[in-house]
Length: 356
Ligand SMILES: [Zn+2]
Image (tube, rainbow, N blue to C red; front, top):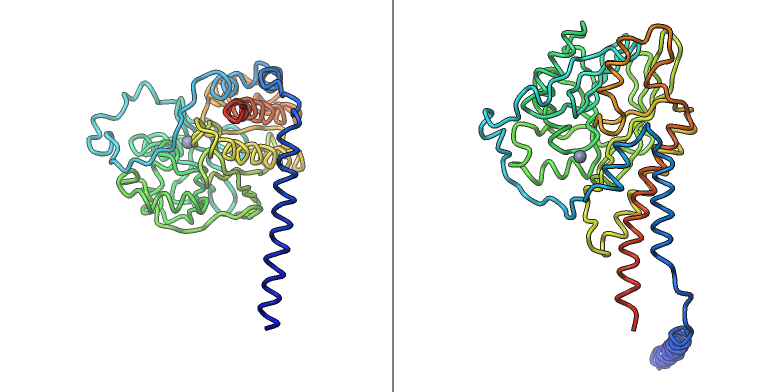
């Protein structure tokens, strides 16, 4: 009896609450909400990105603010043409670049467009990203050998995200040299989910990155930061390098373009927020570690290819990669501003469809 009376009371209480909520909703609908000026807000976000970019981050600005974005998620599971038939790989002169010693203990072993990096320590090498399956042998391993580094000493391989232009050589390097491989959990899942897409590229699941995880080898430590957005498992890093004996802090952004569902408000608005939060997260870590170098795995974002050529004639000038803490922060203003502008367009879409 008591139980029944209690549940009756509960139903009554719920009904009262519901009526209250309906009345409030009604009252809200009758008020005219201040109309937002989405155009002006979008313009302001774009302006903030543009003024932050300066000449340093024009490539990042172009990619994220100006060029059309790929709209959806890639759910294909096809073996890439260049894996099926290596003769279909892009011609060498479109991607070949000379390797370069960038800092005392940090080397560029990438190509014209995509980058790979080797951080050397007294106990071995931490390799970051591996480019495509068709050029990792020549660019990454060949580049290391040209610079006097022995690939046998690769102890850690960090894959910023599981796209073919960065994971391409991971399986081969893991099999051949046995380094520990670090990647974001969601990207390990992606590799397992699409065996055809990652044919010849898929390392066996190893270390799942966590936020703040430290990879220490010899005298060097790379701290990993989870920066989901570009892919759900994208990871970024902060670490120190030496410039003529002087420690310099670097921030490495693991994924830049809006390579997620971004053409519909749901889940586009949410995806942009994840991306924006990641930009802020890494910007904060870059600031906390005093990063004055901004690195990426695409030359269009950090100008690595051009800067490597400037390095050759550096003399007693400042290091071309050492752009100062303020400029490093400006990179994140560009990515965040472009993402906010695109997110606002989706918010505007929602507001317009909700209008009577
Ligand atoms: Zn990518």
